[in-house]
Length: 71
Image 1 (tube, one colour):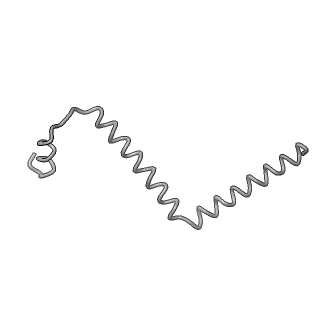
Image 2 (tube, one colour):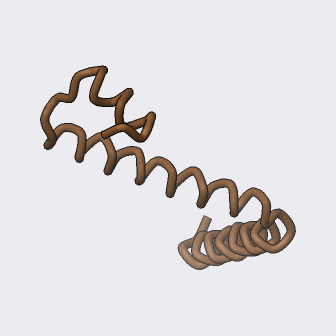
């Protein structure tokens, strides 16, 4: 296989992959939305865990009072 043929094949493959990706993005917006939602949820959870690691420990009673609105 010549270098020119290999380059041409790679370019064709790249175009096919791009085309397929664009098609998925256009036709399956629900999948795109789901992926973005999952990523945002993961980022928020990671931030919450990091924040929890930086704060002090709270006992069960304090949590229950806060949830009941009697802080």
